[in-house]
Structures are given as C-alpha cells and as structure tokens.
Image 1 (cartoon, rainbow, N blue to C red):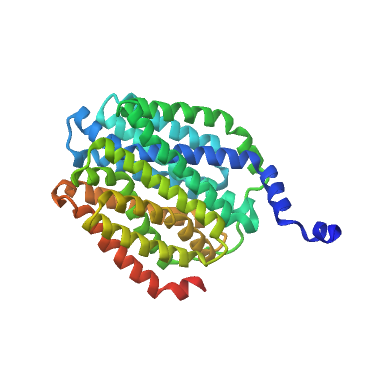
Image 2 (cartoon, rainbow, N blue to C red):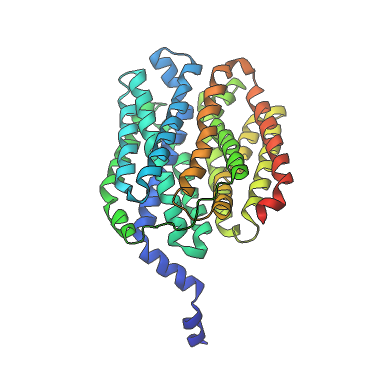
Length: 381
C-alpha cells in the first residue's frame, strides 16, 4: 500500500511539496493581495473625508475610484508588453508609492495621482500573481487561486476598522498601507527569483472569447461600484459614516467567506455554474437592500460579489487557453467595467435618492443572471 501511494502520489503530500517549492511566491502573493484589499477598501470611507478636506463634492471625490481603475488599466496594458519579465518587487513598489502619495494628501490632484499609481501596481499584481499561482499548483490551482483572492478580503475587512480606529483619518490609514507596502517590496526578491525558472512561454494560439469577457466586465463593474460607492449609498440611505465603514468591513468579511468556501467547493461544480449562482444571489441581496434592509442586503452582496472574479477567471482561462495574453485580457475586460461604472455613477449618486443605488444594482444583476442562465450550458462545455 505504501509503495502504491508513493507511485501514485498522495494528494496531501503533493500539495505540501508544492507549497514548499513555491513558498516565497505564496507568501508574497498573499501579503500583496492583503495590501490590495486594504488600499481598495479605504476608498469608500475616505471619500466623504477627502471631499470635506479638499472642499469638493462627493461626485468629484468619486473620481478617485475611477483614477484607481484607470491606473489598473495602465498596469494591465503594461503587462501585455513586459509579461513574465515583471517582478513582484516592481509591482508592489508601484503600489507602495501610490498609497504613500495618498497618505501625504498635499493636494487633490496629488491624491488622484497616488490612486493612479496604486491602481497601476494593483493591475500588474493581479495579472502577475493569478496566472503564476494557477500554474504553480497544477490541478489544485483553482483552489489556491480562490485562497489567494480570499486573502484580498483580509485586508479589505481590516482597513475600514483601522480607519475608524485612527479617527476616520485617510492620511493615517494610507500611511499604514505605505509602510506595509515598503516591507513587502523589500522582502519580494526571493519570490521573483523563484519564479524565474518557471516563466511560462505560451505556444498555443490566443483564443478570444468575447461572451465570458463581457460577463466579467459587467460583474466587476458591479463589484467596483459596491466597494467604492457602497458606503456613500448607505449614508444616503440614512446610516452614519461610522456605521457605513463598519458595514463595509462586514461586506468584505462576507466577501472573504465566499472565497474560502470556493477554495473547498471549487471541484464540486463547474466554475461558470458558481458564477451564475453568485449573480442570482447578488440580485436577491440587492433587492433586500433596496426594499427592506440596506445593511443586511449590502453584506449579502459582499458574499456573492466575492465569487465573481475567481469563477469568471477560471472559466475564461479554460475557454481562452494558456497564451500569455490571456490573463491580461481577462483582467482588462474587468477593468472596462471597473473604470466606467463608478465614473458614470458617482456624479448621479446624490440624485438617486435613498435607495436608488441599490435599485440600479437590482436591475444590472437581474439582467446578468438571465444572461448567465441562457449561456450556462455553452459556458460549461
């Protein structure tokens, strides 16, 4: 029996060996995603404070979110050209510089520049770490991808709580992020060296699959609006700024719980089936927020939004193949929604009324759910 186990390979032993082999990549990836989650989650509660501090409207302050996603788009575009030559140290360094500029808060446009730089590092990191993690862990790649993206939620949960603890100060909160980013940058060298030997050279043709990219673009637009504009929508619904920040932490706690669940359940159903179920759940949660309890509905939205990216990403990689352009293309499609949706919505947020934001989310997730159900069989083939 022992000989057979040795020959066939014990799954737990194989996973342990993979973790040992890729330890540096795993640790730096997790630390980076925690920083990404923290920096992103701070936008929501920081917007009203920045608006008061710089003497601008909430609509203008919402441009900070679009600046972040524009930076992400620039970072992903850069990955089309540098691809495997990009290093963890470089992308985390860009993120650290960005949050450092936001911490300084010298002027509104300096803060916007910081959001662009943080977003650029964010976009590069997403295109860098996700495919490397998927490759490094083989058949367990989808589960480890869910684990990696779950750690994004750790930073996103903690950041709003730290924000409240630091007296609702975006300056102090982004300073903490900048210090963490510098530490990760200093320690990221081994992760880059470990990956050098495993740099992937794609020989398969690049297969563009527009339907899954469109699904990803719309789903990520919903996620971007929830994380960036959700706290302001909760305030419009009658909640205090402190309550909105705390609910954002609860949102990301549910977000994290969903990705942890995916880590264990990834092999039970096809990825697009999970994606479809998450859209239906988001529709139901948005309906609860719009009609009855905005706080409870917002937390539910966090759980189901947490499933959007990992399930869409795995589906897209299976449909589009293993070319080096695949990961940047998937992420770029999501950025189309991430950039445009907050940019289009933020000027009208105050005019939407108490629950208008959540009614809009009801409409978008409802239509997307219908589309996913119609395409379910084709996407799972």
